[in-house]
Image (tube, rainbow, N blue to C red; front, side, top):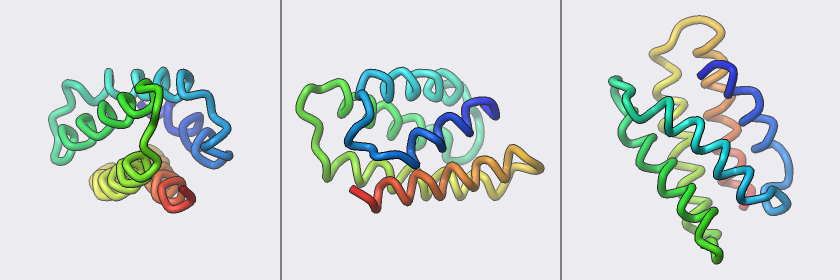
Length: 107
């Protein structure tokens, strides 16, 4: 999971409307694989929101309001989870949570 943090942050800091939805879905696949069997508070909610976001990206007619809400929810959930992780991974997750919130607010 730690190796996915920076590439995800980088993708979120760009112009989201110019991102290829397929690439976004591929990145989400990597995260959902990590989250599927995670056994910590909030993991199931994050997993469910990642699946919902992927469906939006692959659906052909994404709902901007729904994507905004999912990104915001994921940012809040990731930030809460990061509070329980030590060291550089926790710091990376805090940065990821902020990037998700910023991305949601930018839409």
